[in-house]
Amino acid sequence: VKAIVEGWSIDVDEATTALSYPLRDHHTAFVLWVDEYAPDPDVQSLLDGAAKAVGAALGARQTLSVASGARALWCWSATRDTSKSKADNVVLPRFVRVGIGSCAPGLAGFRRSHTEALATQAVASRGDTELTWYADVELACLAAGLVGNVGVAALVERELGELAAADEAMARLRETVRLYLQYAGDARAAADALNVHPNTVRYRVRQAEQILGHPVDHRRVYLETALHVVAALGVELDEVR
Image (cartoon, rainbow, N blue to C red; front, side, top):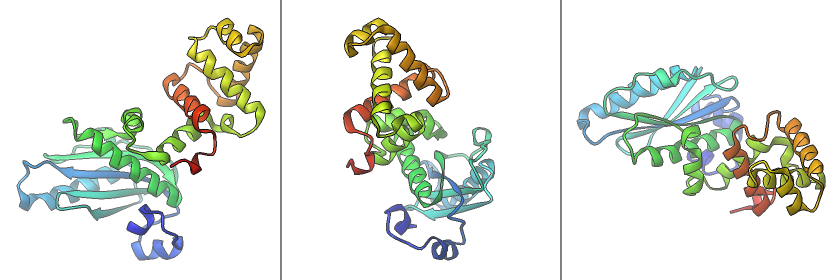
């Protein structure tokens, strides 16, 4: 597990056999931890029970658990495809809390979801919520630098899709949409900044919406964040450290 989460070069099939866990599946990582108020003799049984409950709620065909200190578990839930979760309704044992990453495929997804789960734990530990999803604290995690380049790249890939392509046409659409959103949907103000006609702005925004598959004001804060990231750092985010 250490080799995988630290990005070492490994043979997927050999690792699958060694762990008795299907690494080629989709993975939803979650971190379980027990509050300090729980009696020490009860900690392991609380963690084991919670791991089974959360794994079942995530629809896991298999769950992998690894101890992380005396009062925490790192866990992964394997599914054939994107997990259809009922974890919001799971009943956790008293004193147990959980942070859950997003579902992603293969070794890269195993690592990414774990990074998200750890970041979620870091945020959730400041409050008293029993169950916290990465999706609900993603922007806080990004702002605090808790997910690094992995989280930034995932945001851009998810929110922009084909609009993140490294060609001139996509770059022009991204910049138009970024300014259009910056000026609160005022096509004339965006057109002045771009030195084009307002109708050109409107046309480009419609093109972008066709590529995105939804209006630009849908999930606006996430889309605008992704656009600002690419404008500042470029599309080759794997090179950013």
